[in-house]
Image (cartoon, rainbow, N blue to C red; front, side):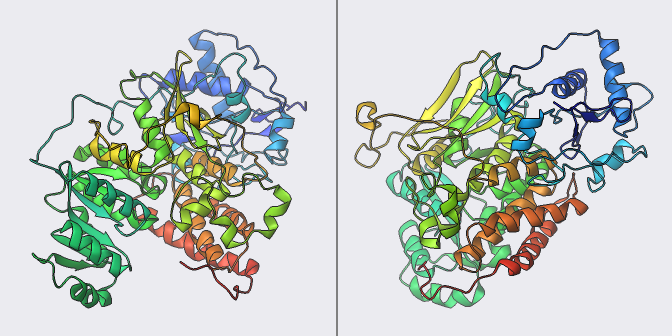
Length: 587
């Protein structure tokens, strides 16, 4: 293994340049010394691709620890406050030392240049990462790719968790207290995205449980026929359509409905649905960053959020979570994986969470050889083996980008560090996700692959609603057969590394990742680019954004860079553009 030269450049570890794009700046109190120790441990840990055991770490006195970390910070070009390292507000827990072979597998090249010699203040470091060093040749320059994959997967000495467990204020942390029923009768809900996959399954639940839930407001896109049927069945008092020129069509379709609902239009109309005065819970089933503003509006109105929109936290996590705490709003995950984690940690004591294990079906191409992916057609990508979902999310499942985005979402929802979130392929989709506790126990949530179950739990939490066996078949372990798990093929699923890298970079990078993916998938579904071009468009967009990365974005900056990423991604995609198929796949 190559050796770095400490006398020349002590930020080189075993020949590899340290990446500071994942570093975050935040106020530290009692956890400051723990962060310093985690930083020192991560620098000393080296893992080979064969999974060799971690180096034994010597325990040193507090004074020696502070001195060592202070020297390292100094070499990294970060100004250390006069009152010492332990009182600084820098957290460098994201640094990971990697062996040559393991790093090469991750696509990381040896360091070819040194860090800038000029010292930078902590404030400068927190504002912009454009001047930070990068691993040349990574999937995403400026962030370490899936640095702890081999360390998490090896069972030798147990997982060293750098996370301090779920923070005290994470939404929905309390089960018995904090739940206040301020309504009578069925729980009133607003539904954003009523004609989509999440929306229609939510309404299936309401239809089956009229004594538990009622719909007070609906927001939909362009499917006026389906929306009219929903209005006729559930009789909401407020309805929103995306485009004003469809209002007359809707009015004609629901002319026989009494009483007539109020009809609103566009973005402002969606916000009205989100803030409906009767609604207690708002289900966000709308895809993309378009769901961010109505979610923020609902939080500001004190509504609980049944979150089925990944982008709300992926793009807006640093902004949304403090807002939820301020207004006392609970964010409850409605997708299967995060609902599984949420169910597993109910009653888990503070600091009890060690590791999150997200399961993935592997998507449409889990049994395809990598060499065959160049021949993928749209129809192939839409054949999910287990789940019935929308077109976009089905393609995300094929690329495994959906799982990468879920890693970022889990980081924000449950307070786990990226090093402590793992992905495993589970073809049967029976175990929806698992958590490992500090005592090495593993808890998992199981059930048939049916999106209605996590949606139901989100709506009914903390209660458990009795379901009919005719429509909710019981899990039969004898008939179910074997359950299998395997490591994901990183050559087949490069979106994983991109997602971990973007998550470690933080700030606006995760929103750019999501927006670029959304645009690339849209272009693929329109048959304008090939399947393998999806990841190329995403990589190029994220790499370009390094120059303008904002670590602590405002809502306006989040929205701005979401829009920028879509425009840039479409422009990049032009060099991969292909002729549209003569027989496009029907919607």
